[in-house]
Structure formats: structure tokens, C-alpha cells
Amino acid sequence: MNLFTQSIYSGLTSGAVYALLAMGLVIAFRTTRVVNLAHGESYAVAGLVIAMLDRAGLPLALALGSGVLIAMAYLWAMDRVLLRPRSSWPVASLILITLGMAFLTRGVLLVVAGVDPLSFPRLVAGPPLRWAGGILPRQALLLIVTSIVAAVAVAVFLGRTRFGRQLRATAEHPDAAQLMGVNVAATRAAAFLLAGGLGGLAAALLVPLVPVDFQTGLGMTLRGFIAAALAGMVPGAAVLCGFILGLFEAFVTSYGGALASDPVVFVVLIVAALWRSRSIRFEGRARA
Image (cartoon, rainbow, N blue to C red; front, top):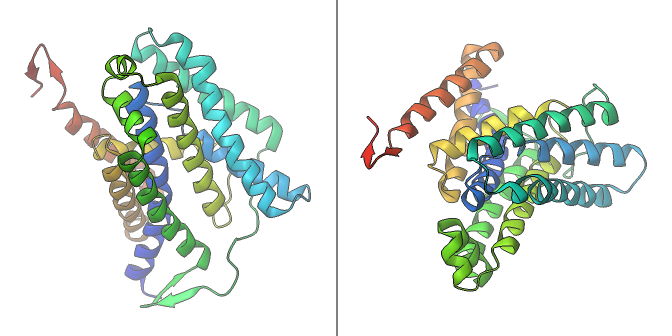
């Protein structure tokens, strides 16, 4: 097996998930200006729900649909119950609320699903593909292709549809959008539903390859946030940065060891935060 080629395949697989999560996180952020630290829980909720429903004997197609819908409802309910009624609060307080929601969700998942990782059958059967000395499962190829298609679909939705333009207008200036007749509450709800759907889709495609447990969500949030921060909170760029982050993490794991992966990723998070902070303005002056 060619280690370099295999690292590329592994990086593209994980990067596809990071891209979906980053895109959803950016869409919700641009609508509310709040970084949702519970965003990755939509991935964990969907993955565990699908796995438990599959074990209960529900047809896999219904389990997949139910898991994605529950992930969408989870983020929508969090915004509707916790964030929107407190929209006048400082942003830092709202971010802390999302962090508290993440830990609450983790506790609920621990009680409901237990500590053992869960998975469910792959959507694409058959032997893995062997190219250039590397092995790529068919499920991973489906994940990569679906991520790219989803990114294009979201870009078309935001740029070519009337509701998508309304969502972009709300992201740019909600008060002005409301004066122009845009239903800001509806666009905000749509942003969180879309974010939850992307998180649920990522779980539906990756969990057959990598089992999920109750504490997976926060790690997914951090990686999605790193990609989003590197992209400057731009949806299209977040997809590209998600793939880049996945490749970077895969090469670190392959050549530096699995134990080096998390420390290096967190160093990237710190560097990204410091780099992005240069563009923050205080009293009209750019921070050096």
C-alpha cells in the first residue's frame, strides 16, 4: 500500500465531512453572528439515532431520513428556544449558551445511547476501489461526491433562488432586510434547518465507516470551525478549507502518528484565530 496515496484518500474522506459541517456552521453564523458550538452535535445526534433505529429493525432508508430530520429539528429548536428569544444578549453570552447545549446534548446521548460507539450498514456495498496503491471504500467515494454536490447545490440555492437571496440579505443586514419585507425569522429558521441537514447528511455517510459515540460532536464542531475560520466564514471557501484540513490531518496522522493529530489540529485552530484577529477592527483601526 502506498502511504502517500492512502493519506490522500483518507484526507478527502474526512475533509468531505469537515466541509459539510463548516458550510452549515457558516450559514448559521452569517444569519445570527453567533458561532454555534453545538453544531457538531447535529452530527452525533443523527448518527446515533440512525444506528439505534437500524438496530431496532427500522428499514435503513427510514432510519436515515429520520436521523437527518431529527438533526435538523435539533438545531432549529435550539435556535427557536434558546437563541432567538435572547437575540439582544451579548454574542459572548449566546456562544456560552450553545456550549452549554453541547454538553447537555452529550449527557443525554450518553444516557440514551450508552458509551459504546454505534454504526450501521454502508449505503454502497462492494469491494473497495484500488487506485495508485491506495484503497478507497465505495462508501467514502459516495461521501466525497455527495459533499461536492451538496456544496454546489447550496451555492446555487443561495445565489439563484429568491429565498436564498433573502437569506443572504438577512446575513448582511437583518434590520435592512426586514425593512425590505424579508421574513427574518423564517430565513433564520431556514439557516438552522439547513445547517442541521448538512450535519445529519455528514453522519449518514461517514458513520458506516467510522462509528459514532456520545462525545463525537464537540470534535466535529472544532474541526468544522477551524475550516470555517480559515475560510473567513464564507460558505464556498469553507468547503475548500474543509477538504484542506482533512488532507492536512490525514498526512499528520500518517507520518507523525495518531497521537499527533489532535495537538496539531488545535495548533492550527490557534493560528487561524490569531490570523483572523488581524482583520478585526477596534475604533476604526485594524488590529496589528
